[in-house]
Image (cartoon, rainbow, N blue to C red; front, side):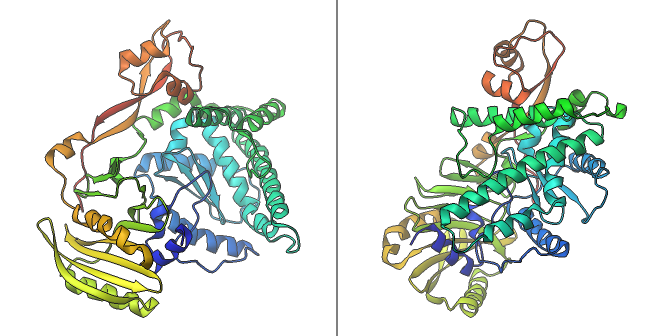
Length: 478
């Protein structure tokens, strides 16, 4: 039984399958219990489905806690909306707390931009073009259109349907690029921003994998390089006039994003190898060595290399006597899925009084530990197929036993990386600038994040993005 079927069992154990969530330049897919699919026939369907999916996004990834930056993104989005003659939806623009560059639109006008994308962009022009692109997806109801194509001809071969869907997806991206540029230009932004951003995105991909990825027949997005070239050519043909109120869209934009968290944010917990540390909630937990780890707003956990076992931690239960909480959980689980309790006993997790249960359902076995800690009950769930349970049970128990408060040394060791701004000096290159300013990025990454070449020499006075590492100050828990 592979990961997909394991995730179905996770849904039985209180729907914690968010564990293996991974976003990739698209809205996150639902995990856990499968929901009934809504056919997007009308704009009302779009609005209803988008509202539900947006709540899932907030729960899975989380939103960036920065009211000023959030207001800034909404200001740009609302300015772009003036170019749409008929608005079918009430648009909402949000920043997700995700460090990969990503943007996506849900049906009904729910637009999400990641903090990683904000860090990669170098001007308000670029950001406006990206937001315009996503507005077009929602306004043209591309999700509904793609759903119709996805259904396709049931008699055609699967690879034919996949190729048709990919081709249609590429067409939608080109349409969103074109119309997004038009929206940006109508609002007084430079439509060339679409091209420069895509160029930087392509360079970031090259930096990440070591080479430019060649587009394939089944890609749903055109290659960044080709899109950048097409958009640059179109930008030269679009007639537009700069909004003078925008001023210097490069400098003002950089000032807006100064201090933005980069990489993993300790506020959501961080992995150091197999050890997970959460400074704000003051705990640590060690997952089995070599397992694939994942962290989301709903759960943190790990999947066995073979995909036939999972162990995860979540805090979705009320505070109270661990036996009473465990029995309530078991009763609810049995009522909803028929899972039976095979063992139930008190245990000690460090100095904490906890409760442990073993549950069985079908061919699956789960070991669940309930730990009262800092005003909530933490639940550590390990489960696997019954025929391999003996192999994994010791590792699952070790994970549960490892739960404990952080040490003072661990608290002091946790750091956060933030986006900083410095002024370049005349004749300085990226190596010299990095050495002088304590930049934690290497010259290649610094070049990509600033939209310049690695051999660039500064004239002096330019504002440059760098990465600054500083001690993390834990926020007091509520």
